[in-house]
Length: 428
Image (cartoon, rainbow, N blue to C red):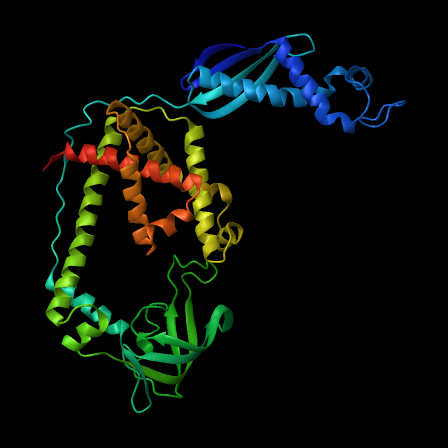
């Protein structure tokens, strides 16, 4: 096999591939054996006609497509491996010469991974991010824990208050006409949580059981249902029942009930420690993000559109997967948001471009710094992931597929490269 490589423009190459006639004949025979049963020729049982007879009856070209698909694909793969070409997209294929007794000759245009120009990536200035845990934050977490462990009691001797749960029937009208999605029966609404349109819950305060009241609100201009966005609506509301939350007392017994702490002070210390860990992770992420942004500013890369489109494809697939987890699909989502598919994809273009830039930059730095992964690196990452899913490591491993392992290794490599850069950054 002979391969010639011609640069036709930046990040685009044309490969001219020539395969020996003997190899072509072997592939031609293979195509005949694969397709023999498809041919009917008078005087022969179906599938029993000799190859020469098939070519004479149907034309020699009848087997060329399958032959080329077989040997052409194989030759192409060998060519890019032999020439060490990092292809990101394959474009036009043009057959120059094909036929029995001839060398197969064809060209393929490919888009290749771009070169990354970046210098002085060590010593980048990064603003040091630091956060403290306040007493107010600890108190807020304690209140959240109290809310979570509250008892719900029925109330029938007073008016509705903020923080209560009201069981209501409601129906909304715009210009005197009921609208779709504006009706509910025996709906439990926590007053003050902000689940409904702004102003709705506040107007219910003071109601008693079996009372009816008309509530007027205005839908926001950016409301997801365009037919009612920005419009004033009147809701007829009937209250059936009132429930209140009875919060537990903050004491040592509470600490024992909701945690492994023996005292309230121990629980506060534990909360502080967990909040501090979260804030340290937040600070680390902010500093890494700043470092990455400065790397992108420093680098010179001419990114092929094909790479950006493929990254958008990946983002869209992930979006579709998350919709499916909610029992939805992309088609219905686009209808609901009044957005066409092209506009939907367009919103991801900038983030996709940056994602590709970052990937290419880190790959280049990883090569220059000779970053290597050890088995221990990968095992530690798998252990962390298993812990995050509350599974034993060996059990977690049973569910990992080949692509999962590949993704984990890529993530570990990125983490090692970013750590190297952060270790060499200047904190200001």
